[in-house]
Image 1 (tube, rainbow, N blue to C red):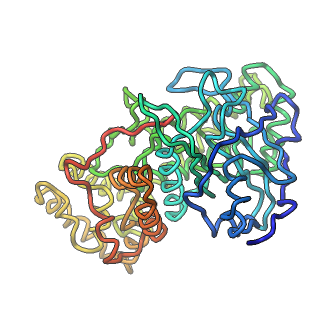
Image 2: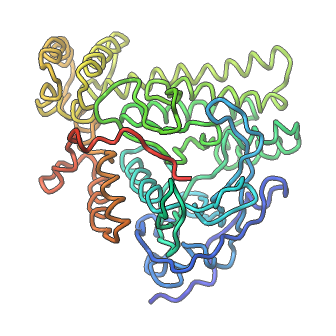
Length: 477
């Protein structure tokens, strides 16, 4: 076994910020940690030894029972709009940031999620059960393989304890999460709500130095965050992904997808699709995500206004910066969806062609992933309850592709064979709860090669049968 390293490459810049940015917080020990999954490639990229992490001392660290020299565990403070209602104090209620590691690829947070109560737990137990941990591991790593900016899963560890959820005693687990940072729109809102201009200035300077060194000030920061979110959300939608809880405390200013709670990928397409059990009114439905992104960015702009300026000219400048979001989102949406139907250089009129297909898919409840993948293989019409709906659209599409050099290659690169479908993830969770991680490892391996068509993974591309459909997903808190 590899010897215990005396240090990891920690350099904890957030812990050097003023004390009101966080609360020092040790993770709470667990009785019998057992490694469920380890991301060896990610570990190596962080300068960590996967053999040591998988050993007894590494598992103890991943569970929060001890941590190496250089770590400075903290719970971060932030606020947030949750389903439109503002809460001035949220914070890390079940997560502890161990510290930041410096690598050749940059600076990354290492956080333990489900590591016990903190000063921000708001009467919660601060724990996670195995289901949400397995879901976040699978979905975040699938998103990374699909090319979506995202937080990553370094490890999942069973705790040997149980947590009460939904009237049941569920097996506990801890997720070790890696992120470019955990700075959120809600972090800015936290200090704006307290009229703490000094803290806003410190946070803005820290964010610029860490994520947007090209930014010339708070206004430029707002514009760059808006651009990052436009690209991110367009990419989500092109994959049929629904975040589920796009609250401002779940929008990372780095432009990474964060907080995989009741998230899901669509099976049958419909723009109003909602999975989150707590989203009773469809605020965060698939088609609403662009508007919610804009709404969240408006809250960031409001928080930054004391630094930008609160006169009419400053408000106009902030509004103009936010306008870049809508412009870039529309361009990205067209580029990504055009590629999905084989068009490498889209024209404005191609939007009507794409929307005509989506309209037919919604009426016929065609499977989102299988339909777009099927365009390249000739199988798309099979996804329509009435194939005539596809047949009436196809001639215009085929005529448009005559202008393309290699539409098959464009479609193959834009449309995955498989995604982490709800029914498959739920089956993996059930097996994991029963002590069988083999289904997890099989699905995880397949999701790491989402564009590879392999016979031994063919079943993982299947849409759910009626009895397998998962209509609701849950946060797990």
